[in-house]
Amino acid sequence: MPLRLSQAAWTLPFCGMLMLACCASGAAAQDTQPTPAQWQAEQIAAFNKSEQIFDQAKRAQGLLAQYQLMRNAYDGDKGAAFHAIFSQYVSWYQTYIGDYVAAERSFSIAQPALPGDAPSPLADPRWHALPALDAIAALAKDRKAVFFNENHSAPITRTLTVQLLAKLRAEGFNTFAAETLYHSDMPALAKRGYPVRATGFYTEEPIYAELVRTALRLGYRVVAYEAESDATGDAREREQAQNLYDRAIKDHPGARLVVNAGYAHIQKQGVFLGGQSMAEHFMRISGIDPLAIEQTMLFGHINASDDQPTWSAVIAALHPAQPIVFENAAGAPWSLRPGAYDVSVFFPQELLVRGRPTWLSLGSLRSPYQIGDGLCMDHFPCLIDARYRDEGPDSIPADRLVLDCPGEVRQLWLRPGRYRLSARDLDDHVLLREAARVAAQPPPTGGAPPDTYREHRCSRDRVHSVSQ
Image (cartoon, rainbow, N blue to C red; front, side):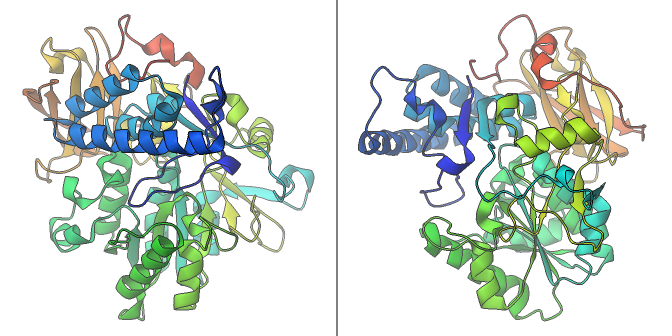
């Protein structure tokens, strides 16, 4: 079973780029339930073991081999605490190799209704739904800063941000900052024009790489603001906020800022990690009130029981084909958590085509490109990368996926243009390279719901599927 967490029950106790879940709903699946102190001790040990495995995997040659090592480690330890921690690491790698459904199965944060949630916009006729792409751009028109959040294991929460960059640039926004970026690579990134492995942590995932690449191509100044000390909790949030102000605003009075961060780092009020969030510290330091866009709560999960009830009701009533928000007649936006966030985004129900979600189209910016098993030269599994033709071999691909066995047919999702495709085996040997040209196509209108994904799987076990 995948790790399933309660949104109210998880915290972020460790430093650095990692967001770890501490109080998993699956923790009680033991003969003898541990005491809180025992559970905390088990998690600390699990975190240390996870870090060791993660460091070992990074030394393996090639992304597919790195993931294989992590998957084997996950399967080899059935401890609840280890799975509670390490499943999130595994989910990150599953997004890196383009297996987004497997990432959803591995790590899920349940979204129950909580006290303080706003009433459903369906309950009041004064609220009306609007395409999020247009509505958020309009709401940001007179703002100095717009803050987006994301779920690191669910890249659907990055897709709208990619699309909005062009509209926000047209409104005068000129600086893009992301929590995941490494400050050391910023000068080289600006010259290169595309992300590489040294650019950041989550930028190894193709949608995040596309977010950074798009910002560069649109002329944004790209800024890293992650804390560089070993600070945790409130101290880390404060250091992030100070870095963001110093690098994006302080010497650039004309800066208009777009920020991408994880989860509640962007909340504008409320206790976070025993203190204040990055956004609250930033507001105090800068005097700027950002437009805070919440994107991590209102999307579909593999297990429908994890879905936020208001999301379920809105999707059942409206069946949106694109992300939506709600506004009233006065133009004020609806937020699930008023005060903490200004706007809540509803993502549509996920659809799959050949086992991959159609949100990879990025709102029709990208088209499907069919890939067959011939690229693998009878070596399975093999990793297929698609890189823009004008970028170097070190670039993070525009998309990637794994083919597991003969006869399998999948789809990459790519912008119209020219690409270099490559196929690599588990030893990271290049099996074949070929050029590809992608033409624009109309977006798909159908697909299969996530719970039929097994129909797309090969008869033997997939190398990149965590044990169920």
